[in-house]
Amino acid sequence: GDQGQAPRLRAALMSRPTMDMAARGLRKLGIDICEVVREPMADGAIAVREIAIGAARLIAGAGGDIAACRPSLAAIVADGKQPTGLRLQALDTLATFAPTAARPVVLAAMEDKDPAVRGAALLASVRKGAGRPEMYRLAPLLHDKTVEVRGAASAGMVRAGGDMALEQLYLLGRETDPRPGTWVAAELAQMSTAASAEFLGKMARKSNPGVQAAAARALAARKDAPARSEWDAVKADARLPSDVRSAVAAVDSHASSVAAAPEPKPGAEPLRQLLKDNHDKEAASWIVERLASLEPGDAIEALQAWLTRPPAAAPTASPTTAPTAPVPSAESAPGTRAAEPSATAANAP
Image 1 (tube, rainbow, N blue to C red):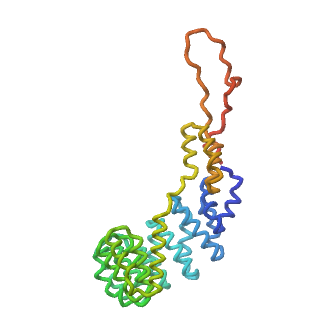
Image 2: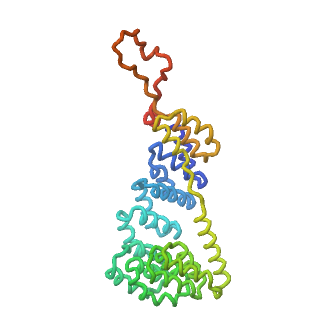
Image 3: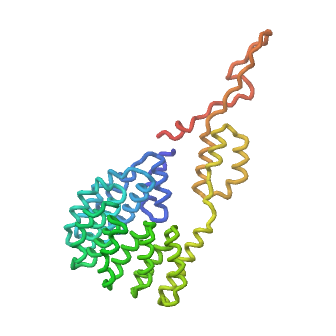
């Protein structure tokens, strides 16, 4: 709630190591991240623009509003002089976090001179589960002269039609570039049908190492029984090239470590619950015992929760009919804690 730290947080937002913490701090202060990154996103160097887009994605992923970022992102997508990677990052940010508002930008990008931008826009234009009408729209583009558009059309067929699209992907086997297969594998990773798992298993045995590794990652990411069965078969296939087997082993090791990872620590949440229930004594003990073991951000939140806890309720006298001595005023009553600012007031600008 310290507005005096806003300038430091604004500067920290434009550095990759501190971007996450700075973004969370600015949000707590009620500062619009897009207002902070608007100028760097429009006029900064390429690396600065990448950080600015990353900050916008970070806030959008946390449920924040990036409406003020949309004009700058759209301008980057439309600017053919910008690096392709930067344009794709801006396009993906709009399509992922503001799909309705991004529709005009996506449609315009489908006519772009850069085939990579055209392909990304084509895939972004596909509605998941749209069915045969969308598949009919994409079918001619499976024969496009640019691999980016062919790959986007293939992945879009899967996104629109699911299992219905698999028989239409016969041209995928002729591709020597791994990108179409990689994009199709990413779409199949989100399915759970037996047919899609079988298709991934076949892709994992093709002679294109990039596609084989992508198919293996897709199978490993799925939890359905058909995919687990195909994944076990791929791991046991001795015919896979050595580099693909190394990739499969790395994916399997990562999947095992994720499965065995401990539950995330609750941070300062137990303390907040104790304070909410007015258990100040227990909360104080919690801080003494656990503060040193918390992550820096959680430790700061814990101290803030303690310092901004609501005041304890003043004791009330029991009713009695017998004459009693005069009750001292609240100002002079011993043991009465002075009122402290509420959490809302403490966080107010």
